[in-house]
Structures are given as C-alpha cells and as structure tokens.
Length: 317
Image 1 (tube, rainbow, N blue to C red):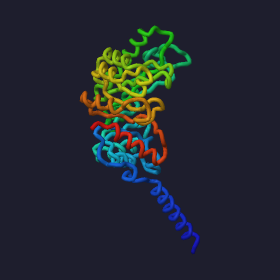
Image 2 (image 1 turned 90 degrees about the horizontal axis):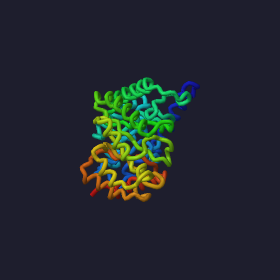
Image 3 (image 1 turned 60 degrees about the vertical axis):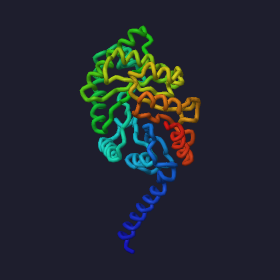
Image 4 (image 1 turned 45 degrees about the vertical axis):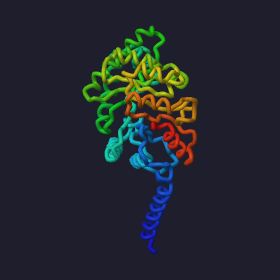
C-alpha cells in the first residue's frame, strides 16, 4: 500500500470510528421516555437537561430528542450568545416541529446596582443615568433582533444589585424609570421582558427579590412589555405562599419557571406540591411555557428517565 493511500484510509477509518462513537453515545428518546405523547402542560426543557441521553448530539438534534419525549417548548438562557447560524438552525427545527421558544436572557446584572443606583462603573460608583440608558438600549435592541430570529416572545431581565447608599423608594423609582425606557424600545418589536425575582440565599444583594415587589414595579412601569417571570423555586425559598401570590400578581405574570426545594431539582424531589400548583395555574387559564430551569437529582441515564417520569406525574390530567 502506498503512503498516500494508507494515510487516506487511516483518515477515513478514524472519521468512521469517531462517527460510530458519536452514534453509540446517542440514546433514542423511545428508550428513555415512557411515552412520546405530548405533555398537556407546556413543560419546556433546556439544553442542559438529559445530558446522558443527548451526549454527542448537536443542539438542533437535542430539539428533536425533546420533541420525541413529549415536550412542546424549549428555553435557552444562552441564546443571545450563540452564533447567528446556530440560532437560525434551532429556530428552524422548532418551527418544523411546532415547538414554542421560551425565554432567553437579555440582561442579567449580577455585579453592580445598574438600575437601582444608575451605576455603570462599580469601581467609581458615580451615578451615570445616561450611560446606563445607553447600555440598556444596546441590550434591548440586540434582544429584539435575536427574538425575531428565533421566534421568541419573552426575554429575562434582572435589574442588578441593591444600592445601600440610596433609600429604597429612590431605588424603586430608578428601576421603574429604567424599565420604562427599556419597555419603550421593546414595545416596537412586541418582545416582552419578564422580570425575575431571585432569592437572597442563592443571590444575596440583588434588588428584585419578591413577587409583590415585582408586581408593584410592573404596575408602576405600566407596559405590556414589562411583566413578571415567576420562578417558583426562588419564590418558595423567599416567601412561600405560592398559590396566593400567583393569584395576587396574576395580571402581571407572563411566565413561570420550575424547580423544587431544597436542591433546585425536578418536581417530586422536594417540598413543593407541583401537581396542585400546575393544576391551579391551568385552571386559571394559563397555557404558556413552564420553563424547567433546574438541575437533575440524578445525572445518569436512569436519572434522565426519572426526570421525564416526574413531569408525567405532575402534569395536569
């Protein structure tokens, strides 16, 4: 065998072996899910779930896997950071399957009192409302472009840290003014930002913590492009009383996310009676996304099966 032919054969053989390894890592949805029947609630996974079953798959192929398991929605916090071609490919696949895109993160501020204190430079700590507005404008316009590309209706916004140097009422007014500005931009595209209150145990120092606080904020902003993302995990940790708070804030809630307590894993692993909560939300007429923003109690192949069974167990009848 001449050297050139040998090298070519070796290359082809290596490629075939790599392909075989990839295929062997792929697990058919039919061997993981007990049923391919669509869930009645629009439970929506993300690309971090069922990792063992989807090992070696592209995100586009993962969309197909989730569809075959019965899911009809999907959310992706990282969508804004993905290459444009991947965004388009994911959206095209979802459109072909009739799946709905959930939230992606448009602006999540973890390290400075961006909106509460109008601080863009946390080292200088000087207030610069104009620079904050420019930052918000850039993020909202970019989010609107991504949303159009991937057929998304909602994007997540976290306003940032508290500013202990300002009285709470001034902070509230600053956040409301900044969100009114963001809403004016988003209203042109139809995109809805959903504000996510986060618990102080996992996220100490953040300004937005509670559903009543988010409700008052949305009322102050007064825009259809500014609503609440009610993450039931965070709110169970922060305040509990989930159903009463859902009822009280209902007119401003546009989106729900899921996670049990303690641990932030799938339903049935903790203290929240998700079967009752989902029935309540369903009976109130909600047919939107229920985002599965949580980990798994078991990351093995059996754990993937357990995850899918848990959602069958808590789905509405």
